[in-house]
Amino acid sequence: MKKILLSVCAAAALAAAVCFGGASGIFASHNTYKTSSPIQVLTLKDEKSQVSAEFQRHYGPVVYKTALLIDGKKNRLQCSLKDPKSAMEIMKKQPANRNFIKLSAKKWNLPELTDATYKQYLQKLNLYTASLLPDDLGGFSNNDAFIEVSDFLGIYDADAANAAALQEVQKVNSQLAKNGGQPVGIDSIVSVMPCGEPISYT
Image (cartoon, rainbow, N blue to C red):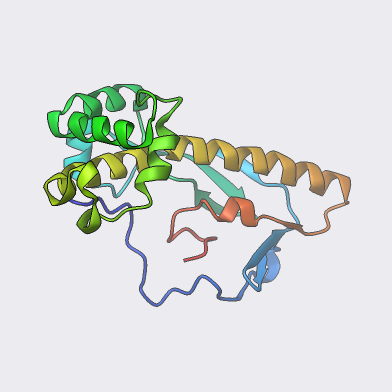
């Protein structure tokens, strides 16, 4: 399976850009976003994502489930698998993937790949690029499996990233309630927003 593109960002976008929100109340200075209004959580009706049709034929729909309303601007959190448990089983059953996962587990002495352990695999695989796989991971012959497993785990991880963002929302709203609406930093939330959203680093 070819490399999956989650979204297309403008090449000229600069993460360190200084943004001003005017009356909206949100602003960024030195790459730090702040807001003075409580953040609302919106439940979406499985909005379609830009993940490749090929990936979704294999593993089921990848959708946007949640958005945040920040000073009147709707910002979607990361798209994620609609049925991650079933998708994980499908991915693991594919022969090439199964072999690559086995090699990965052997190389790093990892437990079976599950919802509880996938982050260990993802952390290790993020150290490599497809063209530079070592021999004990199958080298060039395992490029496709490496790409597919890595891409899958990256999307699989979106639910956890979004859950962490929602915890940060609770903290921000609590701080705003305590300090009388003085601006509170929200970098920890903005950092997990997909590129192209109204409030993001790209």
